[in-house]
Length: 178
Ligand code: HQG
Image: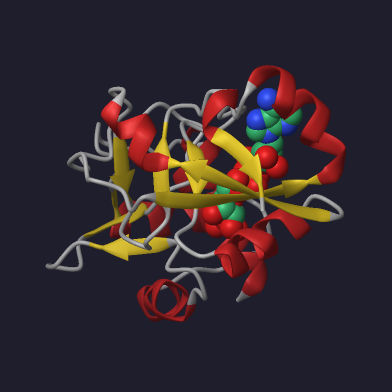
């Protein structure tokens, strides 16, 4: 299931064209079409509806969502394809946290936080979660983001369905190390 879940992340966030899948502007895909195209793609994986539903239900981080009628699926966040998640702007808590690796600090202190290959900078409401995210990249370090000041200065925040906070970028003046 792990491999199948990774494959769904790849096609729903980054490379739908790899299997000829079309995402709608809000990044939804038709579940039956996804299954048909994924199975036609010679990668040794075999999808059916129960497997897709099990992946959605078991993802530790709620990576995917099914539409209420079960006909469509999308990744909740993490896209590199350009999409409009249709998330309304949300008022963030006073502070949010960003986990990164110490080796990125010099560049972050010079340039602030940038989305890189993704559509947004990902922020967490808890320092513990941020530390886990950072440890994916090396020795973790947690940055505190002054979200209240950023919002007051006009930055827009969204909260994804899996509680990850998203914003376009974080200027260095709003960052400090925890
Ligand atoms: C860093 C996972 C140098 C940034 C997680 C991060 C999250 C800079 C890395 C989600 C920089 C990008 C996202 C700058 C930012 N100079 N480095 N100016 N600005 N960076 O993976 O936030 O498992 O694209 O600090 O749990 O680590 O995919 O972003 O270290 O929710 O569902 O550039 O991905 O979820 O790394 O993680 P990423 P992220 P999934």
